[in-house]
Length: 229
Picture 1 (tube, one colour):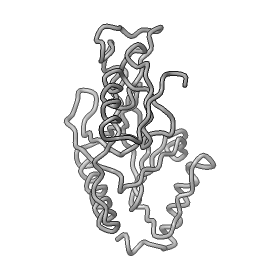
Picture 2 (cartoon, rainbow, N blue to C red):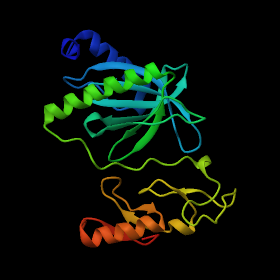
Picture 3 (tube, rainbow, N blue to C red):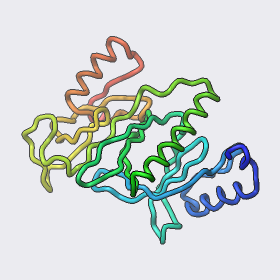
């Protein structure tokens, strides 16, 4: 089916339609050999609360964005290379069902489908595309993944010191290494993790110590810095 659609007029029109929905805020999506396989609305587990997002599955990338007008205008475009994706099925919770995690080296997050059948279809198509790309490039599945951020509402206290209570004046922060919700005192350090960002990122006290040990033993390409430097 993918080979049949490559470089066809109908495929070009479908991709152009997606580009038009993102407008000037989106990146161009039409490249040689790229095929749009399908689209759908999934619920993405965000920091504040779960939110609907539109997802477009291509044979080499996964694109998603925020819905702004009648489900046909989108912004906040995100493009994920499928060869960097690992999938993990998750159990249901009281708030979300038919869940799975999309894990990449730069960002990992949880999504849920409207039904179990829809989840199976998404996973099947994603796995097929990933398998095809890895076979084509000769790459091995990625083993390094960014930690998903735990939603703010998952805890009312710091997940490191387990003492500080969050309030209007006491902000929640997220460790970029483990994804835990932590207080300011437990996340004063910054650490440079090149695969996530060119700038030092906030990490919790435990992850900072672990990263420093890892740096001195096996990862000389990592550097630490104090806040404000």
